[in-house]
Amino acid sequence: MKKLFVLMFLTTILKFCCNAQVLTGEAYVQNTVMGLQKGYGLRIQTNKGLGIGLVHQSNLNVKGESLDEKYPFYGIETIVPLTRCGNMRLFFTPKAGFVNEHFFVIIPEVETEIRISDTFSTALTAGIRARESAVGVKLMVHL
Image (cartoon, rainbow, N blue to C red):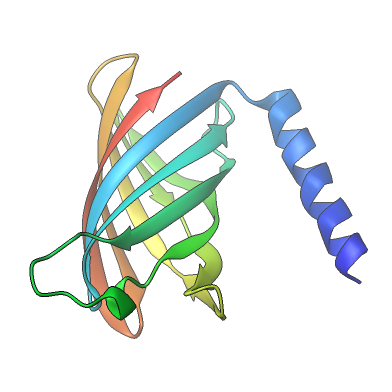
């Protein structure tokens, strides 16, 4: 079963790589119920906006914070375009992955991307994390 899942995942990635038009690196800050978290990711998107990416997210170092409260998240995100208006695009970007390397979570998110230039764009995100709202800001570089 595990081999089948890995094979399906690799086939999906190869399909996106063959049709991909944009490789994007992203850095973001998100305010969640676990505190302020920083993250980065790499995504591949088609011309129409459909894509897949890898993400990592963890708490910012805050004074007085213990080492057990990092809540690192490693996972994948899918990018599904909802609508477009000029330089703005709205995406549904659910993420799935592991928190603290033990707990599997699915994080539904909506992202509004504003294209600044051909190389840079910024985005505002809103989602649900641990049954609480999570909002964030992203800076994206289109490679």
